[in-house]
Image (tube, rainbow, N blue to C red; front, side):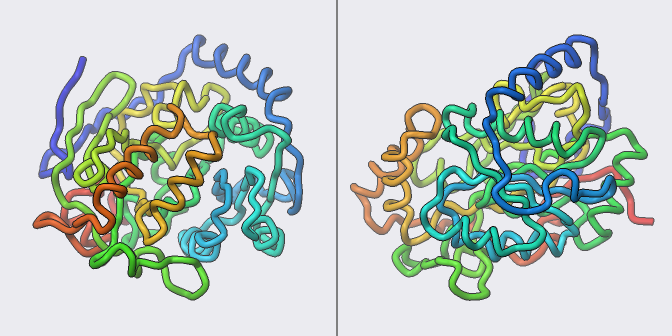
Length: 344
C-alpha cells in the first residue's frame, strides 16, 4: 500500500514501527546468492590486511570506485572522523592515481576484479561477497565515493554509540537519501580536484531545501527531487540505506536502493548522504561515464545531463529554495534528520 509523505519531515516522524523480521524465504534467497557470488565476484586483494585483520567491533566502510582520486582524501577524512576503522574498497580499473593513493593508506583493504562494474551487477556482487568475507552480524557503512554520510544523531553522540543503541532497539537500517549539492556561482568556477584540504561542500555548498516528493511502499521509501531533477530533468531515485546491519538474511536485492529483507527498510532512522556530482567538469565526467558503458540504462541519466548542458553551458543552479550547508544540527532542525534514539 502506497503512502505519500512530505520531505523534509515536519513534526510527524516517518515511522516508529521498526521491523527487523526476516523469514525462511529471505534466508534461503540470501544463501543461494552467496553461493553464486563465491564464483561470480572474481575478487583479489591488492593491498591491506584483508578480512583477517578486522576485529569484531571494527566499523567497516565499503565502497566501489573508478577514477575517483579527487574524492579519496576528503572521503577517508570524513569517515575516519565518524569512527570508521577499516575501509574495504573495490577499484574498477582506475587509471587516475586512485589505486596508488589507496595502497598507501594503512586502514584500506583494496580489492580488484577481472570483471567490470556492469558484469558485477553494478557492484552488488562485489559488495555482497565482501560482506560475507568480512563477517555477518555486524554494522557496515555501504556508500559510493561521492557520498558523505550525516547520520541522524551526528553531533549529539558518536556513531558507534548510536549503532549500539540501534542494536539494542533491534533497528537494522538507517535510511539516507542522496541530497545533491551544487556550487553557489558559475559552474565553471567550481573546481574540485582533491589537490588541497577543501571538502566537497567548500566548493559546492548549496542544496535544495524543498521540492521533494516521497512515497512509502511495503519495500521502503521512494524519494525524488533535488537539483538534478529541477535543473537537468533527470528522474533520480534518491533513497539509499547506507547504514546496514548485515546478517545471513541480507542481500542488496534487485537494486542497492532496496536491500532485503525489505521489511527493514521501513525505519524510524533517517540520515542524509551529501552527494557531489556537480562541479566544473560535470559535462566531461558525464561523457566519460557514457563512454565507459558500465552504468544502468546505458547511462541515460548522464546523457540527459549532457543534453541539457549542450543547450545551456552555464545553467542557473541556485533558486529561492537553495540553502547553504552548515552543520548536522541545521539539517536536523530543517527536518532532514530523524531518530527515535535519544542522547543519554
